[in-house]
Figure 1 (tube, rainbow, N blue to C red):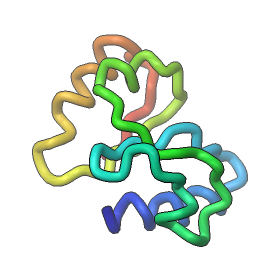
Figure 2 (cartoon, rainbow, N blue to C red):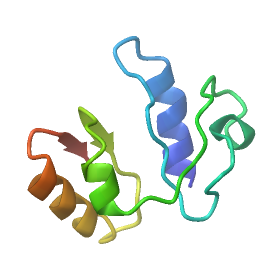
Figure 3 (cartoon, rainbow, N blue to C red):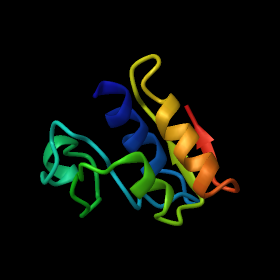
Length: 88
């Protein structure tokens, strides 16, 4: 969505942040740069379950979801990878 696209734009400018995963059910398979032309990412959006993302070993996750949809993601991440920083 719009918030996720803005976050990609902002975070790609941050020297200490690397975009390692982009999750979206609605655009799974499409390149990030196709939907966010300013993006330098070569990643493709994936349709991943909360448990799969929790097991991915990322240091931090930014959730840009509608209200009340992040709860299962946060629960899966806290259960599988409690040291992961989650921003919602």
